[in-house]
Length: 68
Image (tube, rainbow, N blue to C red):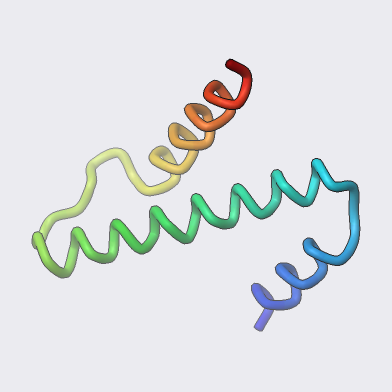
């Protein structure tokens, strides 16, 4: 429920650039949690560096790609 409130608030208010950043972080977070879930269920393994590290790395790559 808290996630839905945050999502709705993020979409409705704030500057366009800030909204884009919030939505990007949310999408990368959800996507990486989903991939880790699947890795644990279907491959019976977990990543050693943690989901948080993957999220940070992917966001970094995304930012670099947008600059070029």
